[in-house]
Amino acid sequence: MKFGLQLGYWGAQPPQGVGELVRAAEDVGFDAVFAAESWGSDAFAPLAWWGSATERVRLGTSVAQMSARTPAATAMHALTLDHLSNGRAVLGLGVSGPQVVEGWYGQPFARPLARTRQYVDIIRQVLAREAPVTSDGPHYRLPYDGPGATGLGKPLKPIVHPRRADLPIWLGAEGPKNVALTAEIADGWLAIYYAPRLADMYNEWLDEGFARAGARRSRADFEIAASAQVIVTDDPAPELERMRWVSALYIGGMGAPELNFHAQVYRRMGYGAEVDEISALFQAGRKAEAAAAVPDELIFDTAIIGDEAHVRGRLKEWEAAGVTMMLISVADVEQLRRVAPLVER
Image 1 (cartoon, rainbow, N blue to C red):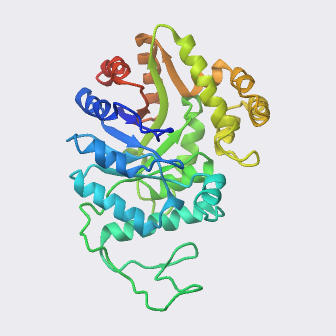
Image 2 (cartoon, rainbow, N blue to C red; image 1 turned 90 degrees about the horizontal axis):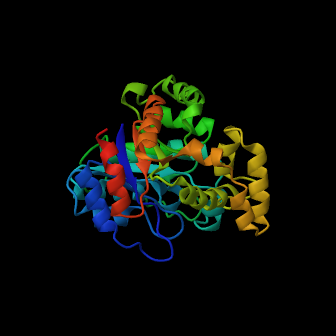
């Protein structure tokens, strides 16, 4: 099992010391560095900037939001980063949610699975550069021939020859249909809130996709990158308290009350009553009470917190569950150094 460093997205200001952290991750043997985006910093520029000081680690987006860019624009970002990094780019994509897609990007959220399929198809056409890129829609039409069209558009191939036609595309997916689609059309799954005890359920979803006609990969060459907090500490209590606030935010605040994909993930784990309570408290503005309502078990299902022996044992459980990469966040180089011995366990 490999390790990846998740830089996430920025808060109110750019984070400090990230360049040093990225270089340290490469030095200690991490396989990849990933950056995310929400509605502030983007996912590609940090990878190009901080990744320029590295030589080996893969540079991935986890995730680039599909509604932020047309498929062709995303393909341009990916092929550019791949050239600049000498073939180290990983394109991680995700649909985000209706609050962001419709509220921030001004795009419709409907039919996310069909949009994902078409989006990936167009990107693969660009990267293959075998013929001018075309798409009949309905979500993306190339050339565009809808309202306001001049009729002058024509199919094009990228001017730049992509470095790799098979540049890996991973998908961020949470629900059963989306995970099955990921196994069918992608090279890897970016799994958020992965719980090893539910591996049989995830495998059913994945196997459905692998079994479809024309599936791109099999389980033997498909990557599963699970995002998780991995914290080596002799005193888990403070970390648990911090994680309660993070969990409450994602369960209660990262999505509309009517449609919160993160909350649905925890419902599938069996925390329906807890999700209802946390959501109600958070949406009422009672955030401290919402955090206090997050049980330890919910955190330990999707995070690894404890001394080195405990962390080593839990990592073996995640690996046995099928995870090929642990995608972790660390606050600074000191925390990364504590995790480093586990990379070569």
